[in-house]
Length: 149
Picture (cartoon, one colour):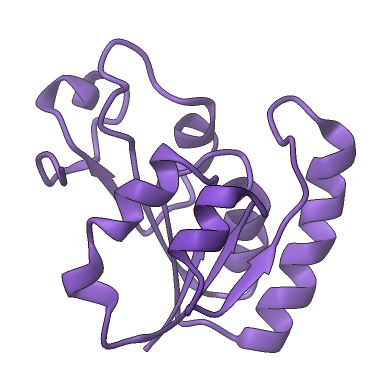
């Protein structure tokens, strides 16, 4: 299995790192921001740097869409897993077109309202994971995993 992890740096990246026991023996690559934390944490990992800022930035959304097309064609992952944020959106939509399985994990700290990324990818995800029962009001078909921290 080959896994693509498109994620923002910081907390979103940290969420995915918590799943190390699941992915550490799998072929994988990361798509994230070229920032100090991600450069350090992913030093020995295969990675691609995406364009940022991403929030409400149409120019970078377009650039990241072309980047997603290029990377997904080249790498041919079996599955895309993300906790967001906006960099996940083009990877999920292009991935869906390519028939790649999509798993989204809504972040731990969004209990009172859904994330924008979660709302956008909910209906195209093959598996949508929530960490709190309270998140079910936004994502009724979400699978409750519980906290990954």
